[in-house]
Image 1 (cartoon, rainbow, N blue to C red):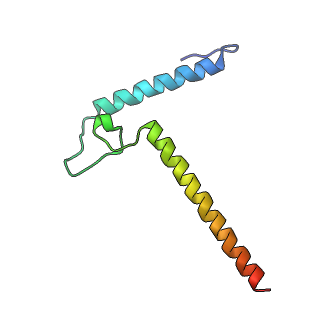
Image 2 (image 1 turned 180 degrees about the vertical axis):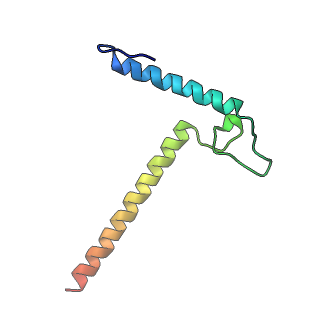
Image 3 (image 1 turned 90 degrees about the vertical axis):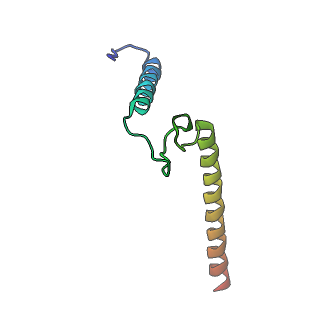
Length: 87
């Protein structure tokens, strides 16, 4: 790729992402090793791995963020209760 001044950089970025995805796909498909029967590799399920789909990953990320937020709120409430009760 040879972007030039004045190019549509959003399109250049989309093209770059597409090319990178193609190369990753190629590397994964042509990788000479395969997991043993007792192994699971973190690669797409359609290649025999256990990685979540982008949609599943987004859901997992949201669930993790909510859990962290709840844990933070609980810690804050505990801290405030200790500070308020100790005065």
